[in-house]
Image 1 (spheres, helix red, strand yellow):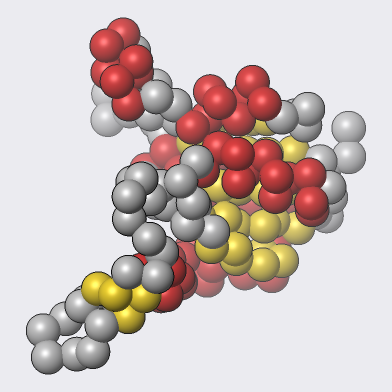
Image 2 (image 1 turned 90 degrees about the vertical axis):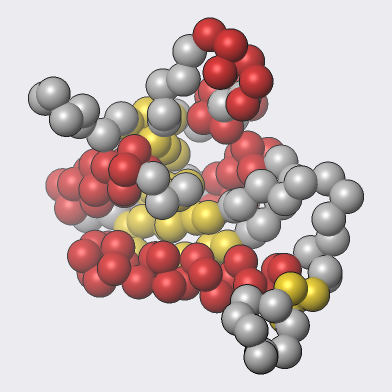
Length: 153
């Protein structure tokens, strides 16, 4: 299996960062590139054009722009750590992040999607849903799921 094009959807959790690091190891071994993606879930009824005020005394900015700025800041350290392995950072705030991940993976013709998971079970999983689980069901591309090591080892 070739691993020249790897997509890493990020939520900036410990599991997401562990997934990015695992993807980077694979990319180094295969000479591949990474696309880092962030797709924050937007609750229904809220427009991406809604103006928000990120700091007192500053003018409002559209929610779409706020998410883009925040993700760039959140990605900065990770981008520096991964260096030239990163082909691009893509920010797509959407109502359904899983669908956006599947669509982008197809558009980029990636060889692998590497995602973190929180490993929720039972009622919490039913209530919260799972972006990773939905991507696994909806994509035809290989998916590697990563959990950060627990504090107990």
